Length: 214
Image (cartoon, rainbow, N blue to C red; front, top):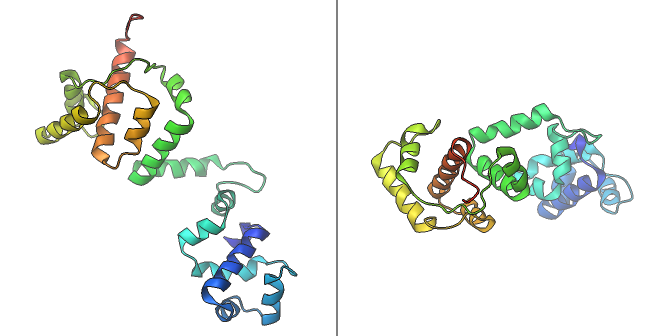
């Protein structure tokens, strides 16, 4: 991993480990002399990859991520090549993990909503302008029978979703502020019912588009 790190990042790692564990620990792990360590810390000599590699085991993931830039972490994983070209196959494999990892999925959804909102709307061919959210029997039937994945069949779950919807969403017009509120809400089920309703609206809009009068 350290072979992909730039000189400045290697220096930050060395300095951090020295400050956290002391010089004796670094000398022991890196197998260098006191003179060499002094020259490295004074920036007289460059911090070579082989000096840093044994120190990485002393860092937590959070510490490593705080010391190394995102670009360098991507390079160390092989997602980003030295010439700046993305390994799309590997990048798509990482995105595919979102199917199994809820945290990654929610982070990905937040990023898409925040950074590519207009692109997403154009891709879907749907206009959300003037959309007022309403719980309806059609939506309830969609949630129970027509959703392709994770159909909601438990009446208690339907009742809970209905309660969440009416408390937080009923009668509200869809807006960027509302989307941001939902995406960052701590209740996973609240985010789910919102996502289900947007899916229901998209399907209905495709097959029964609203008139120009709204």
